[in-house]
Length: 405
Image 1 (tube, rainbow, N blue to C red):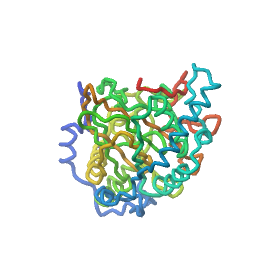
Image 2 (cartoon, rainbow, N blue to C red):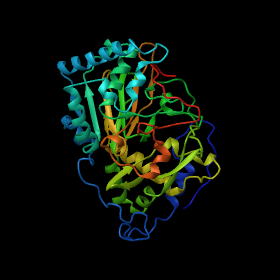
Image 3 (cartoon, rainbow, N blue to C red):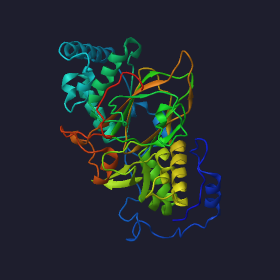
Image 4 (tube, one colour):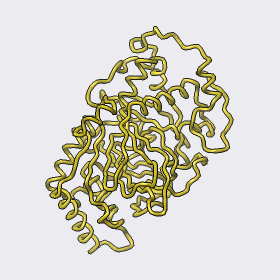
């Protein structure tokens, strides 16, 4: 694949470099008459020429059909959740030493038994299967009176509700089973920086789990719009317009681990952006984990085709996305294998500092999608209880911090 040398930027840059864009414009396109799906020598051979079903959608359609992705809590459901929060904290604080947060118990495989929701729990499971696993891949719960809860209570609430959808996995090298999306002043120019710890824009991407959950605690003074796009819609658009680049989508890319390296592993992994398993099309991408991986020996710079593919993913995702401003108390859940999500750059103030709680949930052990063996390089191995580990590094312990760190 053709490559163009790009000098390392002195400041944080995620846009495609101008010399790459120029080279893409100048090159000659490959034969567009080739049947990439029936040619046995093509990477696209045996891949679907078009995905159909509820997982294929366009943002304007969902804007006009809120029932497909939004759920408003009623007072009975709020009361049931509130009771579960306080009962959990009272019962566990009675016999768990104060040096060990009881919230770690809500990260265990069967933790939903510690956070019973006799009525709303059934709705959570029903919506998980109907919306997240087998539908649009998106579900928003609105109406939590989050202002009523302190840090421990809202963390309990989020972990407890999440336990009815899946089991938490580690989100970083610190072992965080509960994450905090907050500007910590991290340097985005540092290739090891996780962008969720900055106020910079996060381009459309997927995470290292099956279901991603966000609970909005506080909005920013300006910016921070959340967007979600159907990865299946993006796939359809690319392979129908540029099947030659569709072949690139299903070929390996080098992903950077950003310094969070499991024992015995390389500081990078290889994975296509789209691949098949058990009759399903699974997506995995993050531009910020892709554009600087060539800093590691044993990798290669992005080719022109790969740069163009990343730009098409971002362009079609933005064009066909559903955009929203999350409000305090909103819980946004997305199915990570068929949804790309992003957020815009934001500005905090003294009175409004953006803060979201985040969960990475695994569902493979509990009726979720079966994952291919190759995804273990990203999703980690398994804990003794059969739940995936997520990000894991030597000496790490699983933790549930009550605030960003």
